[in-house]
Amino acid sequence: MMRVIILEDEPIVSDLYTRLLQPVSSRIQTARNLEELREELKVTPPSDVVILDLRLGQGTIHDTIHEIPKIKAVNPQAVVIVASGVSSPEVISEAMEKGADYFAVKPETNTLPGMVHAVLKGMEGKPLTGRAIELIEKLTHEIQCKNES
Image 1 (cartoon, rainbow, N blue to C red):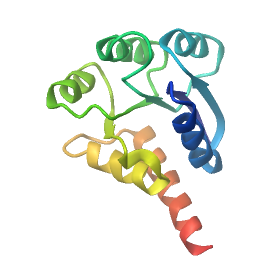
Image 2 (image 1 turned 180 degrees about the horizontal axis):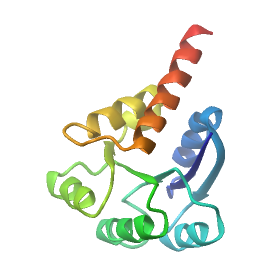
Image 3 (image 1 turned 30 degrees about the horizontal axis):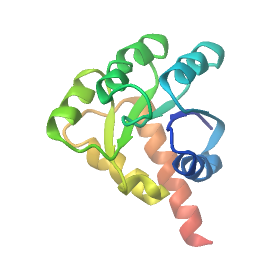
Image 4 (image 1 turned 90 degrees about the vertical axis):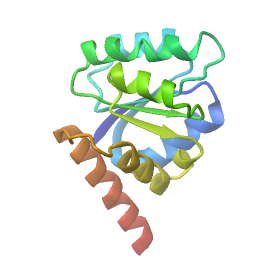
């Protein structure tokens, strides 16, 4: 099972991600700002997935993007997914250059199938890591199980 940290300042969106990921996650931690994220990264075991929103109530989009290398330094195996309503090519490019594994544009991420689709779409032309393959397989399996029931 995956360990996930979600950086999202909107409680409704954070709760939605938590509910969608619970079936495939052993631990889900949430943070509402960069300070809480930094604390979570210090006190919790390494995460498999870190989901970041860029537009937070405080700070700038670039503050969050510049946090990505720090996340990777502390947690190099983590798959970092930026899930944001920001869709400018410059911002996407900057996030990917700083180490994001995927960039998913909201509202595509508001459903579990949407998250898988967004992750797959964000992977175009990028080699898969073992962690990314594992994440995709778990999410795809969960979708298949929900569709069968």
